[in-house]
Length: 452
Image (cartoon, rainbow, N blue to C red):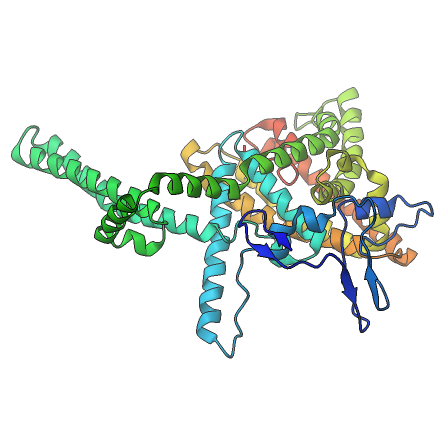
């Protein structure tokens, strides 16, 4: 028996895992990939333990916390309903698809909004790293949306609230116009009085709709919301239940956990990028300067090529292990690279091809209230790259043998000139960016996913 960490439901989870008929259950330990890569023979072992015959895996006397235990509530059970059979239940399948697409859109919008807020944007980075870590540990794309069960409700709340605020804004505008045309007149006083009444009604209705659950139907039935609240107050204990539900909802967002993950991921990536980026920005004029600055810039560009080749893999390793030290385990990442070199090559090409056009949005400064719109493009572009890097990391961790040396050398031969071209183009972004040579420090793929 195992208790779900968030819902409290008791689930049947056997203490031992049985394997039969040649089918094997793959179990990933918390630091299995790290321990497997640091074995004595140096060849690296699989992150997956796969028994080949009928056997019962007995728990060790002193067993470390396994990843399946640490991430069990979200990554194994999840709160996303299964996809209905398309031919047996076409309407349910269609509704499921619409709901999931709506949830993904709401999730990206939510991340874009919090990414546009200073300091809070570390939470957005933490969510992106959490997505990368989930896929890196399990290899399942469906687990790349940790808030997909909550995001539709958040989107419904925003949509319902916005629809009720529209008539209030129109009425406020009419009242303001009446005051300009006839200050103190009958129309001015009448419209302002109606505006106050409507504001009070809308505020009460929105509060009741949120208290009742925030579903879309709650925003359409103000009278039923009032009757529901009256019944809840008569039954007693409403305020205690409401406080508990709000606390559980806020806890499900995991704001503190993702802030910590984002902050540590930011600091780890900054440690790799700081010195090469500062050196790369030495020659900050279009003429390139003379003498020393040019040499320092060339050396910084060379260092940046090397760092950008390994940093996506290192950040995926950090997201999978959730350890800051994992960000600096280059030897482990090099072993993983040898197992799937072509996959890593394709992933790096996709990551940097998608990231380079984002520098065009840094040409001009935007008003603070319009920043989230551009941030939406950043989040929507970076999100799939995190999923891709996590999947390639899982693929490398699940393999036991190195790829053919020809594939390894081919990937190395191709990635160096491609990264050199990326760094060459990156150098000129400082001349079109609003922040000058500071743009060279704003690596939005690894640092904060924002245009400022």
